Length: 284
Image (tube, rainbow, N blue to C red; front, side, top):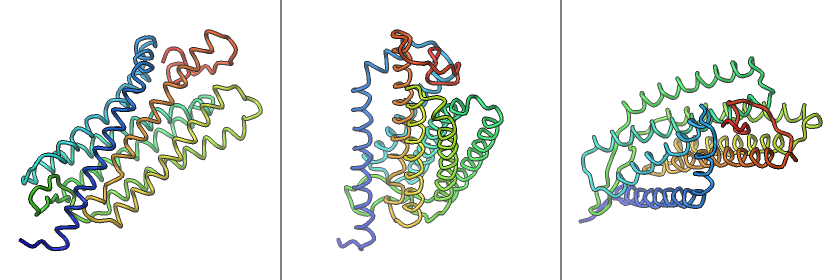
């Protein structure tokens, strides 16, 4: 039986997407295995707080997304309704994971600005607007999205076959928000660099800038791929962005907690008091 070039191209995209999903899951499991001792030391020794709960959710929520993706990749299923349900679930979990990752760094930006409540209120209002817009876009996209499977036997998985610009809008909104937070961090760092040069403060600023830069670049790339690419290539880097942001958020949180614990033991470093809303406080 002969297949069209479109069938072959879609089959190749599904195979490539499977390789990417397996790679992402492998990296995720490898990172968890490497950080197992440090992470459980943090979970057992640190005090319970809202930020610690935020850390746990951010750390383990992407596992649901990766599990759903692997199920779709390796299960032969001609029922597009199943693809739609799991695809929409994965999209929702991915959005939630990014939101929790961003929350950790919104709190850190709040700390860098010496707990400026007006800045926090403005940031949270903007972020809430982004969340509402993302939910509306997700709901609209889930209604309009159509899923397709490969016509070639032996090729499992499914992909979003509809051309939609909603996803690109979501990524553009996220990139604008991350760019704004990065600029806020840089402005504050420039203003207070000489006044506060403690190691914890410097690390906090570097973490913020690096995280926002990565998030901004990934959001732009995903915005372009969702518009320009076809088949399964359209959302190829979406899960990779979710994984990178979750790893950066939790790893940097863990690093600051370790530095703060060392500061308590040695009294050689200057602590930054940021109560339960910061990753540097011992109550986190």
